[in-house]
Amino acid sequence: MKNRAWTGLGSVALCGVLLAITPRTTGQTLPNYGYEWATITHPGNRNANALEAPRFHPPFRSVPIKVGRVDYEYRIAKTQVTVGQWFEFVNAYFPHMTDPRYTRLSGALTGNWIWATNRNPSQPPAFIMEPGSDKYATDMSWRFAARYVNWLHNDKINEKWAFENGVYDTATFTDNPDGSFNDQQEHSPGAKFWIPTMNEWIKANHFDPDRYGPGEAGYWPYNSTSDIELIGGPPGSPGAQTDNGGWGDPFTHYPVDSYPDTLSPWGLLAASGGTLEWTEAIAYGRGLPKDRFLLGSFRWGALEWDRLDTFRISHPSYFPFMGLRLSSVVPPPATFVGLGAASLFFVLQRRRK
Image 1 (cartoon, rainbow, N blue to C red):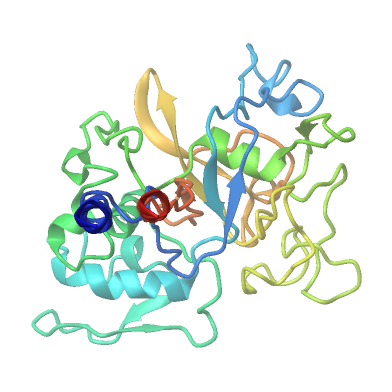
Image 2: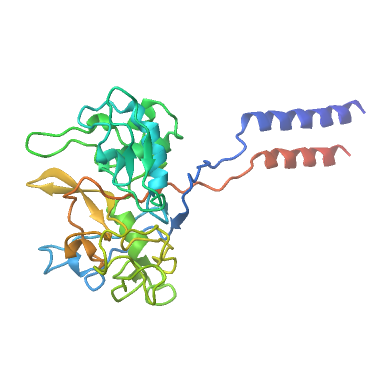
């Protein structure tokens, strides 16, 4: 009797110890922050070939540029960061903004759709969005895009350090007299959110595991699982697939989800039109880092090049204000290790009978 009682008590104690010293889940829980995410699988996919991506190969390039391969799984947001999502960041970061290169009215921070209502520098400003713009693709400088992902990575903690490090060290954000910069080139290991690499963006918008048939992978030339150029037109008009294309008023804008049937192979929206999107890829001039590359196309581009959707390498930014689509780590599935302790308890109970 004594031994049976000890066995029961011991099993309970053992379960308590196991539950106390082991985490409830082995996975990392990540908030979605209001974004819908596509998980990009098939790590180790091949690069695009000359037929799929001619602008990355001769005669457009002296040597081929290998693009599209990503050797890991990742997530990418289905839509660009919107004005409404960016508005929260502007209000959170502005009290911490001390960089003398930027003013309270700097468009590099606020973009085209957010304004400061109070222009008196002796008083704190209040920010407002242009009415109806909350679902437009927002715009910002690359360096403020980096601060935004730092903030997300640090769980939106409203302290200055949370904006300035974690994914990109903003202490490196300095410029040289020759026009080059010293910015951290790639996101730090362990980042939960980051600005997409060029290959991440290309894979998410062009690569299809079943491009040429079941299990026959390849790349689509356009950002919408298409071999032909998209049809431009207002949302809801016959055949319209994008707000890109040079039709109508170039300064008319639409929400990022205005063309729900125009999707990449992984379900991404608004890769065509809206605004060009930042990547981590660096554009070099005379061997020096000069700028970051953009991908996609944008509605109000003044140049035909800006409105091209075809699979290509984009020019680097000649403007400070472009859009952002987030990349993110794939959270591991939650595994309740406490279940193992409960199973052990059940076995011990059976043994004592």
